[in-house]
Image 1: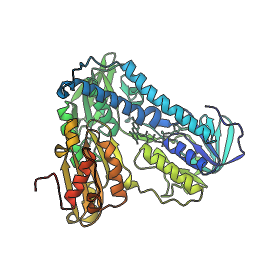
Image 2: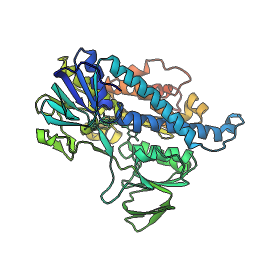
Image 3: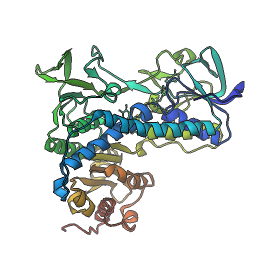
Image 4: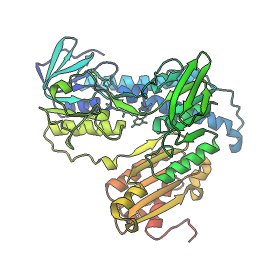
Length: 463
Ligand SMILES: Cc1cc2nc3c(=O)[nH]c(=O)nc-3n(C[C@H](O)[C@H](O)[C@H](O)COP(=O)(O)OP(=O)(O)OC[C@H]3O[C@@H](n4cnc5c(N)ncnc54)[C@H](O)[C@@H]3O)c2cc1C
């Protein structure tokens, strides 16, 4: 991508990093008439577009197609599953990314953003240096993102990989160990199982997706057991050895596991080392940039967005923070982002989606007797039956107050997070939702059913 011709001496905003957080800042700011320099070392779109959200969801869709083909007889359709062609799967995935990348490049260009290719370093409170040139800004936004973490002594290479390498694989292992049962780990486990891989997840905590409501964790574990995805919970990694034919992973309990590959999915660290942040006095903790609720670092006019700011490492949080910072700089005084209202979706099969407080968090916050819960099983939902998916939707309510949490599990339920997040963020009462008409037959109706139940008038339920 080429840089726009006229480079001002002083930009309104200089942005370091063109991922979800950085490019959202740039687009919104230029839309508000501000001059913007967007500095990116690799490709605009960052982790989400090139190594994260989009490629993994393309693989998950290919995985769904494989499962549907295998199960086609159940629907009266004759189809034969003849295997996975990874070259073609990757071509499909790369085509999706390529189209979005091109569109994003066009957007950046048409917004008149000065796009600078290269590795930037913060050299003053108002300046970033790239390839020997200084880009000065009335405001600077740090958006350098995150990298796949490993564990001390666990070296990435060969058959030991992170999501970065796993997304580039042009072959399918016959077996895989996934270290980490969080979002990225369970998504890869789900894809690989559908591609015919014998998968074992090793998770140190007592549950898969351990940050979710415990009911979702248990339901996902049941579903994975049914899919014959193996997992070891409360199991701590102690070492790995690899040779030409595979890996042997040792656990602290003395047991070992063998497989073709090991995927290390133990979380993501902030990409902030050697960028000049500390030298400029940016407050940092464990590599993360500390910012207040206005996303200001407390130093000069320097803001921070995205994965470098402690909190949920999600693309849509980065987008929202980018929009917020652009509006803040433009003087629009936007309302602060409510972190607890950020929706979370794990796109494995079945999908897990949630927003707001878990039941446990709600009971801790309001007192255990001041929380009411309603759970609607998808067994009574027509569309879920058509899709042959199992699961449930659980609403958590402050007794006589608003809905404070929504927790869902089932095929495609990630698509239902929209209404769920409006309910929580607009502090809807069950009666508000119960009076809205939910289209039939949709899985969305199950949210309506759960609200009807909480409002004391369940419809498709045995009283
Ligand atoms: C496998 C995987 C799956 C994911 N799935 C999802 C999902 O389904 N939904 C979701 O919401 N989130 C998902 N995420 C998380 C999401 O990708 C991140 O939250 C998001 O990309 C963070 O945006 P960011 O702008 O903070 O950082 P990034 O996207 O990491 O962007 C930072 C950019 O800064 C650039 N950069 C860094 N340092 C410099 C420098 N010194 N000079 C110039 N450029 C620099 C980098 O090249 C990069 O392009 C996933 C992540 C992974 C790894």
